[in-house]
Length: 363
Image (cartoon, rainbow, N blue to C red; front, top):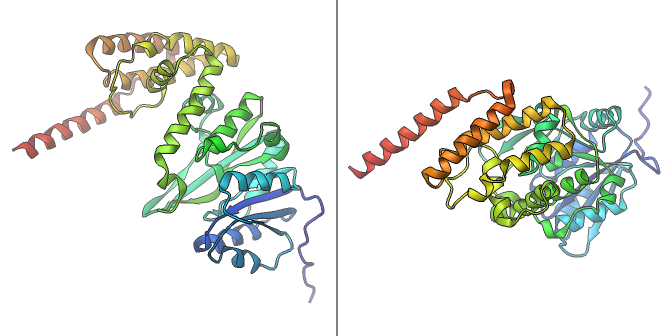
């Protein structure tokens, strides 16, 4: 009976799968197996053992597969330094990110690299599933957003996609300066923003490629305050590429006004942001070279955000100014903007319920 030839990595594989691990023995075996069982074979698997003191290193060495290359850090250097070391040592043209506690779909590499090559991308994200932490499984469809929406949202937060869902060209990331130590916890958002600034092409594989595990030991769970602070720093930098003269106060106000719909009530005046919304959005559309239809779509995002913000303004004068700005934005958006009637009813019901609960507690 004929047997299949053993898998051997080529001297210059097309793909490097890059994983960094520090004391991750709890989920590491499953994560490694999900990489080795890929339908795509021409890759090297670069595992950076970041000074682990548990059984992580032994688990990595227990797999008898020539595609695995283990790099040992003499001490714990952190995720950013470990990833940068891996990028420097990688032999593949493409780097596929993988975390030590996640699970990859069996055809992830094959489908994602194929999609990226066909669409001439420099960075390719994919849809993913969030699971663990006692939560119900949730499929996140990042590919469902348009490029216009993603680029707009990325001015204010990391709207690109899950870090371990990405694959990117090694040279593109090296040209952008790789990961930056100054942006701990949001190192991916910082890097994607710098890649965008140098003209890198982003895209999305419209299918689930991996399962992203949430648990109490994850970095984003433990370091939420640092994440928020550094996210703001990247956001301000992106916003100043649109309007370089923005002060921190102005940028913070604009970000509050234009980002999403469920923010805390304004703790201070938003006048400086209100006065610059139209200039900022107009400059953004012009700088991005957006066609008329996409400009209307951006104004629709603005109108949607302002609608929710005017209920949370600090003072009636600013609320009226925000309402007038909302009307002008909605008019610019034309048919692209849909009045959120259903969500407004739900929001009003929620607020009424909170008031009633508060009254009952006082009784």
